[in-house]
Length: 263
Length: 269
Ligand SMILES: Nc1ncnc2c1ncn2[C@@H]1O[C@H](COP(=O)(O)OP(=O)(O)OP(=O)(O)O)[C@@H](O)[C@H]1O
Ligand SMILES: [Mg+2]
Image 1 (cartoon, rainbow over the protein chains, first blue to last red):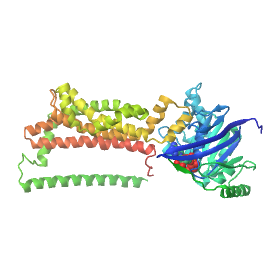
Image 2 (image 1 turned 45 degrees about the vertical axis):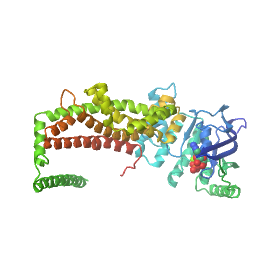
Image 3 (image 1 turned 90 degrees about the vertical axis):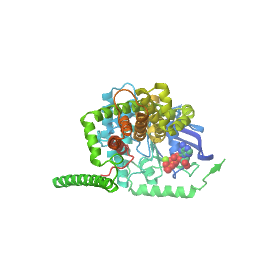
Image 4 (image 1 turned 30 degrees about the vertical axis):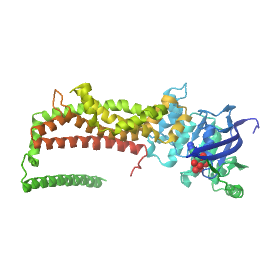
């Protein structure tokens, strides 16, 4: 992997929120970089600021200190070459499945409506939902919703895919299937993927590298390479071993210094 | 399968029969009270007298004409409310300054009983249709602005985030995401505002007598002037019926369908 091909570069990012006159430090001095085509997981306990970090990479929230640079540009606006999947599927219930996926292409210029539909169908086929184009969101199961959300995120052909715990609300079997699918798609399409999760096994199964965050305020505890061959399965022994190792890291290093300064 | 369908059918028939039985029982009690209390027909007519009034009013066309005139006013006045109120509510939720300026005004005017607009509207418009429409609009507009504004503020922010990453901006974002996301709650607000419009219209029609055809409110009012209690009670029934049909049949169904599809309530199968 060429060292020069840096896709996402965060340097000294900090973020705090004020709520009810309380000053909550969420992220502190986060620096990392992601190579083009790399699959990186950000692992951390609940409430440590993972979603906030991902939102900042997406350009949905401004950085307070430091900066995040994607392709040599600051991330102060969302862009279609960085697509995001959310904790909830965030599909639009007023559209059917096909229109939801088309929505990702709706504001892309130089496409006719039929072309948009063809592309959307292609990605729905990729995630295995050919027969549900006309279905509405409330008629889908949780796993199907996340598949549609995946298709919607892939449809504009983004270079970067940001995933914010997209599998956290799903049952184990559905997750297993989706892990396979995501690995397949990543392998096929060579996207740069940044996955946020609090599930150690998920991080180990999917990512080439796991960035471990501490409790709030989130700091980088460790940058942990996962050198296992793909495709990986949740029940592989090597996956379990590495996951255990990671859990140990979390226990030894993750001191609880919850830090809320009331002003 | 077939057996189940039949079974469900007979359930529907059963519940219908039950409802009819209840209504019949209430009518019997009414008649009984009339006989037992030895009330004058003038003060407390029997159900049969009220029914016969309604029958005759239907037959000579006054009732149908009155319903037509009243519904027309309701639809007109309420449409004006909707056309102004929903965009206004959305603008208020978007622009802080607008909300700061007229938010409090809206809250104040919302608490004003709509009958209080009658003196003002009589001076402005005289005894005309326009005066009545004004009361209907003033009675329903403010609650609609307030409810639309709060509906928009309640939508899940993840919809907006998702749409923004997909390139939606400005007016597009509002039309394709924010408005539809808020729609179920907006409909609930519209239902409430419709109820205000209906109440305002009845007050206005009783207080403001216009030249031209008779309206429902006027029929009720003249019932009093002619001391025809059967007419008064008959008109009250008509007013209740119109209210029930619009609220429980029209709005409630639209609301239920939207809330289900938008995932506010889980579907039960
Ligand atoms: N808009 C906001 N205003 C105020 N506080 C916020 C805001 N967004 C997030 N926070 C706070 O920042 C902290 C981190 O939130 P964040 O959503 O990034 O956590 P997370 O790591 O994604 O957690 P989870 O795993 O539960 O999703 C939380 O304590 C939250 O209360
Ligand atoms: Mg989160």
